[in-house]
Image 1 (cartoon, helix red, strand yellow):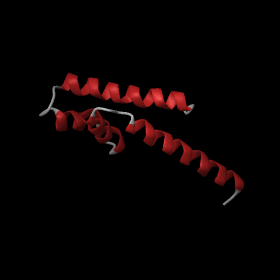
Image 2: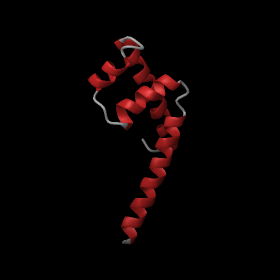
Image 3: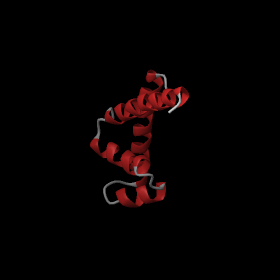
Image 4: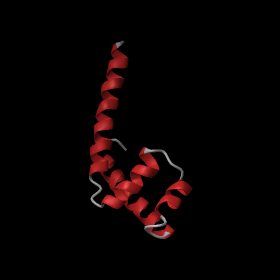
Length: 82
């Protein structure tokens, strides 16, 4: 592994740790489950809505996605990633 590759690998590990920490900051379990389903498991928005509409309405699911994304965004801003 070259020096440049080693540096890039270490940089990515730091970012992954920060992203994991950002996910853990989501306090509501349902919001965390929806965010994990949508983004970690790489599901389409439509499939996420279909899966969670038995529990909540489409608007509620969209609001919960927004809350989760905003939580992650704020942490990543504070960490200097974005």
